[in-house]
Length: 171
Image (cartoon, rainbow, N blue to C red; front, side, top):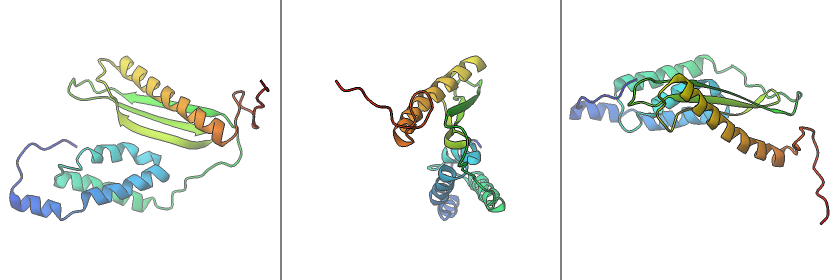
């Protein structure tokens, strides 16, 4: 999807304004955040045009809605057994155009259960694939460190990975 720079006539704008683009996108965002990490990239791309969308953006959004409808019975399973370790996977897609930023994606697993995922534009412009990968790694590492802190408090994981509260020595 590309941003359109051609002016829109008043009649075209009125027809486009009848479609609830932001509301549909918000609903998809809720579904994505709760159960569908697989659509995060498509959601991010559609989100770029919330304030300035055209018919091709509406078409892309409707394709995303139809994908969700076709796959509504796809299950998102949370494993009740497995290890209690955090694992993170990350990747980057380098955009070699100096006017655009590369994309970072990551998923963090607690055992076999995804607990955090994202697909975002990087905050800086990378000059090479290697640099884009390092930016993605740094972003994932920072988020993983935060998730480790959440898991230590929430799931009672100590730093060695075994369950249970750590006893603090009396001072």
